[in-house]
Length: 464
Image 1 (cartoon, rainbow, N blue to C red):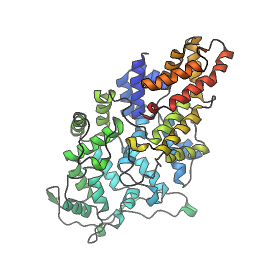
Image 2: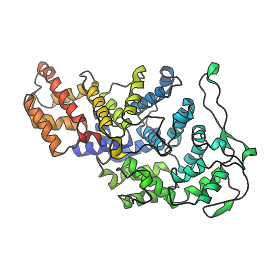
Image 3: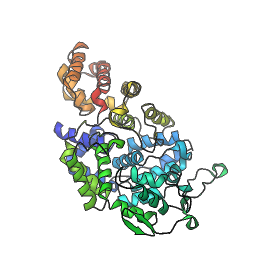
Image 4: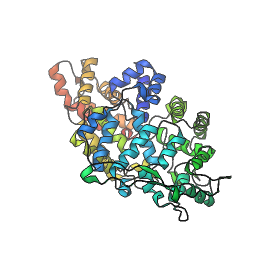
């Protein structure tokens, strides 16, 4: 299979998922890029996760357990775009257990993103507005006739759909009135009943059913009416399209700058806006358009990987996490130490992305996690590379040793300085790599592992 095809396929699965094994890349490359995209945007074509296994082996109210379980799902799923979209919406519609303090409702909140994340945007916004974790996070349970709480109405417009500058304060007030009475049932006490999420509840006696004017339209609007108007706005299509570009294509400035900083690729955003309106906001169609576009295919290594992408990608490469384990909690903790605590974004604005993922401390955590995991010669992904290097030729020159490791670990593109450093190691650590016999191959394992550790320590490995 041509290296260029594998490189493009690896790019697709880094963005639409959390990486892929070499065997998966080769299998998809044999079927073709368009077929791979169809599998991604039509997840029902691929087997679902065995939820019974997760339920049997993983339970508990601690959100750290659920964060580790989510990493497990990212690694083993055959429907990677479902988990990637859930993480995307978790960032855009940031809601955190630090305030919600009810992990079961947070778990249900994330599951809603899995279930609706590739559907139409209107349905997603309605489900979001009915979600108990979101309602409590933004105080809509305190929003009642005569005593409006505008927190949800404001963020719905500012951060969840249209962006700053596309609505007025009166629009916020009237949108908030439309969501009065949208609240949730009190959750069942943990003991002795066990873990149960809260449920949405509409209380008509708390709802303001008077006339409201919103974005130039007047009527006795309720929350769904407001969402119907919101999803028709071009500002909404542009705001969500820029989020998609930032998350799946290339790093953009942080969201608060979007009202003054234009998109770096306006034509790409225009393409996604057209897909939004042509499909009535169907995320499946929008994502198909994005993955098939030239601007996506040409954007390799234009994004800094998020911590969850680093952790899940390294575990995916290693092949060690194929079944639920108690130790999974440490994978969620690893992501937290790198700056991304799953189920608990820092603010309603979500995480700051791009280069802001990395500082001196988080870079150390990123590199140490990858180096430690790749440093185990019993890791299946490492053994796979050793076997593939040995099966290609009996001996590899320093250049062949370097290039094949870069290829098998990615394929990964690196700059001249990085490649020169790797070549220098390949040459000074013994020159030609002798894999001609089983004994020579085993003697070469430490050199191969060290080469892989140097690659995952490179700046290029931090980019998706």
